[in-house]
Amino acid sequence: MTNRTLQRLFDIQVYAARDMLDDLRARRILEKIGDARGGTGVRYGPGPAFPR
Image (cartoon, rainbow, N blue to C red; front, top):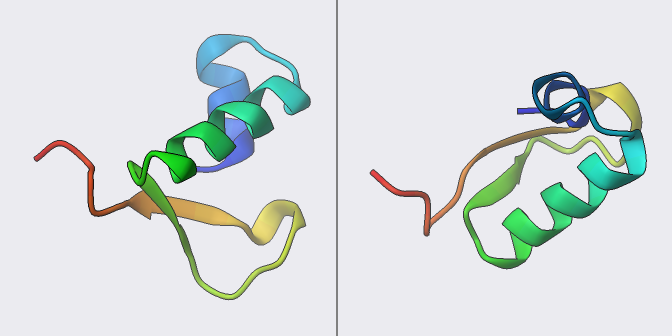
């Protein structure tokens, strides 16, 4: 999952996608994958609270 993926799926702006990702990370549904600090290299995967 990336910021761009959310933008395309929900037809939202970059800032709304960022806020959605922040919320999902805070709820531990998603977690950051890899060492990228920003930009297009940031990817997210299932976190500890991700429904299985």
